[in-house]
Length: 357
Image (cartoon, rainbow, N blue to C red; front, side):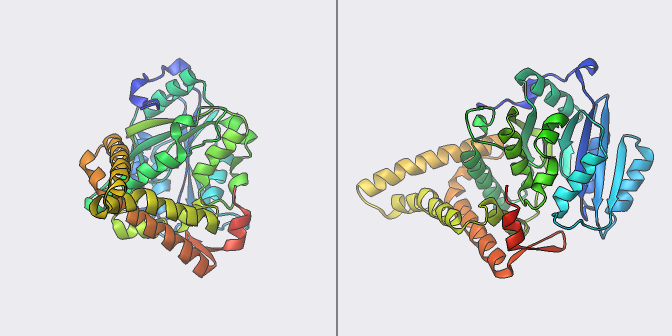
């Protein structure tokens, strides 16, 4: 509730709209790409360029991009045939998109994100009013079925508690946020922060871009977009579990001590209190009940913002158990493989550790 909401800011008039370049890198996105591209081409903005990078796609992604570019002059396509040494595919693609762009402001997004026509004008009004150099927006994650909703609402809760987005704009706070679906950044601030060259081997490049901007002394902020920015993340519980295998251990900086602390926190704060209410007695049940009420209240609030029934707060321990498993699985699989596989390329763990920002 302390964050700015995009809906509360009027669309900026033409005279107040600087040139913006929307940048994304696509790899084998033929299923979701057409819908996302359609929304990008429908954005109501006077000085807009879209730069799309086809990152070594093996499906029809490159053809789809070229066909859209043939009928939409605002779209420019860059094809990457071979990954440069010392780079992950996505940061490399975004770097190439930046190098082909001309905007005074850069909007980093993903190939499956759908934007409302007036979101960019409203975002420009927001950054002007709050005097920001960097704005990231929390959008809608589409959830289909019970298990997706259980996991994604708990993920949203964990994100808010861990990142504390309301402190991002506080220059005295070390908190930072970067969401891959929408990061609007002044070009000069991006260049002064080191561009994606600083993130060449960083798996969680979106969050770490927010970190670089904050550390460079620029004003960063986080806002709520809801359906102004929408994405269908991974379809189904199994795909969600597999899809974050490369991310969760990376988010802990490949540090087993941090993972142990996170697992302990999930167990003690989000699972055991519910067991204490059910099976404990005396002060154990009383203190557990307080912890449960706090957890359910936070979860219900996040569910409301994510536009699902607050009753999903009752699935809190189930979401925590799934999250516990996903973090443990990400850690074990990465260690077992000695690295990660991303976009059909294997990256050794030692190289990834050196690339952590």
